[in-house]
Image 1: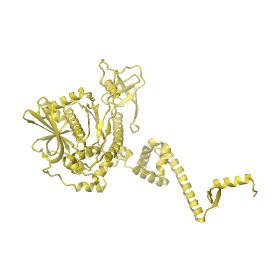
Image 2: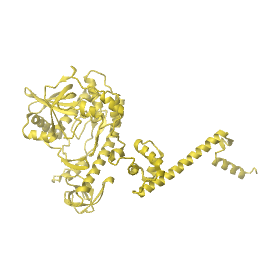
Image 3: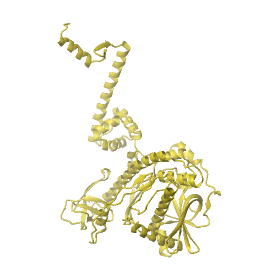
Image 4: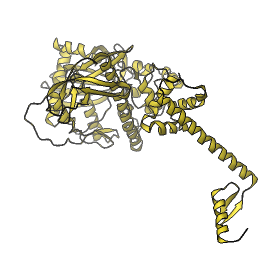
Length: 544
């Protein structure tokens, strides 16, 4: 053809836009081999098929979202299968990308869940929130086998024999992973309190199958309708759990007080423990009321400890908590008083043990994971008596989030100069890692985790902590709204006004919402009723 600038430009554009037969090399185009052309054609066919699949999947998903009662067509079997695989393993399948485009990234998993339930791929009786969070409540056969091979604990001379001192546990009635126990006795004019933590490190070594599984799970998850344990039951509720009448390995913080509950000294040691009695919080409160000597001694010490922490700026204002449990689809809602004598006793003993453990680690340069908290923001003191809900709302706004750190630092909320967490090794992996550092040092062995490794564990623990907290909050919110929908739809519910923006809190249920009325003042008591509620979306609307 003509050798003109226009013709040259047209040829260049044609070759540039269609690279099937020629490839560019500098300012020239050279022909591809026959094999290269065939490969290119095959690639284009696959790309076209992928695009057609995405369009078909998008149309199907959009249709299923619009028509929630429509049956799943047989032609969608492949898409449903891939959706199920993506939902279970988050494997990056194209269906997941299409779901995010059609339903939005935030709702893609919930959309998939609803479709898969309708398609019969998910059992609707399984816990919705575990599935949405990708938490598997089952253990792989290899993990179960590893737990079955664990041998029961046998006392050795390396441990202090604490079995002569009757130990007791105080827990909720539905607690099966018993992490801690207490002892107390008099030695002359002194009182010796023992805070005993289940020694899980005696069964689980760094890097073994059970340790890897616990690291992956990070924590036991407690939901109203179910629990997912960090370890198989043979370990978590049997071999390591401080069950009554059984010899158990423990890591003990032994603290000595004078007759006026002033701390004289402490030591940390490996021990063998035998729990003599298990009590619920209600039973412990009754025993305290009846004058039980051991409990009364510890309660007096706990009261002094709390007062001393408060004098150092600790937050001791603790609100009642809502405990929701679901048994055979029956919702039980119960209010827990965290300031009951037995709960105060246990709480202060755990804070004492963790605080002294942090001091010990600091003094001995033992690398552990510390928890720190910056001082609260200064607030203007209001002498006017406040309704409890309003007082807590104002206090809550001054809180700083606690942080995990490899460097000891003050924990302002607890009024301590250093704090670590090693009191729940059956239920929290970071606690187990911290405990393992202590037990290695006390056994004269090298500590298993270096600072760099602890930093990785710390980062994973912080991320998991946020995810698990969100999961537990969503599930609790769902069942609370289910309870309201079943039991309170027609009732006028008492609520307390929190501020001038219409935010209120339901009394006894601690559910926060907003109403249209702006004339009520903070602290005013109003009555609201449910106008609309959707537990699956976590939404409720109230009106006066």
